Each structure stands twice: as structure tokens, then as C-alpha cells.
Image 1 (cartoon, helix red, strand yellow):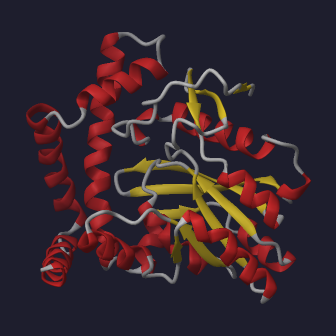
Image 2 (cartoon, rainbow, N blue to C red):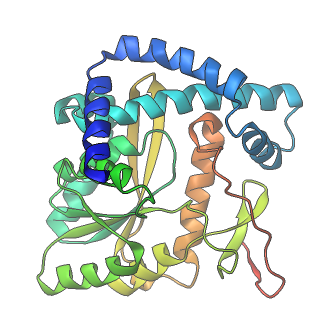
Length: 297
């Protein structure tokens, strides 16, 4: 049954991807009305996250932010389905890299690096980045429970020769690349919610929040440069990506330096345009255990 379901999902996604962008966004407008007003998808989570993150805003302002989020979220969901067949040239126009020279310089210098970003803008369209650099791109992923959806997601995320690995094995693969003297980059989506027992907690969007320490630990152990991906939405279906090099070599940083710098960049990005972050994710579900100290920013 699983292979059949996969091919049905693949065929449906392929057909949806054939819809021209102008019509797709009309469908997105309808999907927004259904999601926000009828289904009310995770509205309690979205409004709760926004109120905690922006306590200075009025109820009216929070409502406007929530509506803007749902509009973008519906756009993003349909845009993501385009990943099954959208040409690289089309992505070049719609996900414009403003300073590709950063990647070129890292290639010339022979430096491996960590790419760090949040679930912001359209992170699925960033899977074309291997075409922009000499490095192999290793993407950290969590296998999905539904095997058919997981297989489809894997196909779409590796169309442009990215490599997907679980967090547990990505460090080992980094060592293998270094032993073979091959250039590589590891992409960390650093705003994932870790378990409550995470040892790194800091202030993020006006509240205490934990973060996976893997971004810093792996970057320091492998001596990676650290580059933040700042994504901004220019207009519907068009984004600009700016690469910000935070560190030349994480091995030369102090404890928590990498994590604090990445959290600061993510927070700055989100505050610029809150609607582009994944507010329906239960990011602030846990409270900090008493035995874990808050890391000052």
C-alpha cells in the first residue's frame, strides 16, 4: 500500500505543480479563507505565540500579524509543491542570492562551512543552493512518520544534489568529507524545538527558549565557518537571500558564541517581518527546568 500511496502523492503533487503561479495564488487566497476562518488551523497556537513574542502590540495589531502569517503560510504550502519540478532557472529568479561571492570565496579558500537559517520565508526553495557553490550540501532532516510523504519530501529536497542526513550521523559524514579532502557545507535549521532538557536556554522573542546545541558543537568540532541565511520576501513568489558570515572558524570561538550569534540573527530577521516565520509551530511549549541556567545574550 505504501508504494501505491507514494505514486498517488507524487502524481497529485506533479499535477498541482503544473498550475501557473498567477492561478496558484488565487487558490492560495481561497485556502487562506478556509484555513483562517473555517478550519481555524492552530489559531490558538499562532495567537499565543504572537502575544508572547510581541507583548507591546495591541489585540488589533496581533490579529493583523496573524492574518498576514496565514496568508504567507498558504502561499508557502503551495509554493513548496512546486519543488517537484520547478527548473533551477526559475528558482534563480524567484529566490535571488544577493551576494553569491560569499560562497565563491569560501570555495576559493577551501573552507567548509555551516549554513544556519530559521523556518522563515520559503526554506524549501533554498534546496537549489548546491548549484551555487563548490561544496556538497548536507541537510539535516528528521524522517517523517508517514513513509510515503517522507519519500516524496526526500525526492523534492534532493533534486539539485543536496544530501539528507539525520542529526545523529551528520558529524560522522563531516569527518569523512574532511578525510577525503572534499568541500562540504552543513545546513542547520536552528529554530527547531529541542527537548525540554536541552542545556542551552536564552531569551528569544521576549521569552525563554531552548535550542539544539548541535549547530555550535558540530561547527566548533569541525572548524567550520558559520554563515547565516537571511531571507526576505520581496513580493509574492519572490525572495531575496543575503549571506551573512558570522565566523571564519567556529573552532576559535568561545562557548555559546555561535549559538548566541545565530539566535540574534534569527530574532532580527523575524522582527523585520514577523509574518514569514512559522508561528503555528509549538516553539515555546516547554518551561526551563530550574537546574538549567539561562544563557545571557
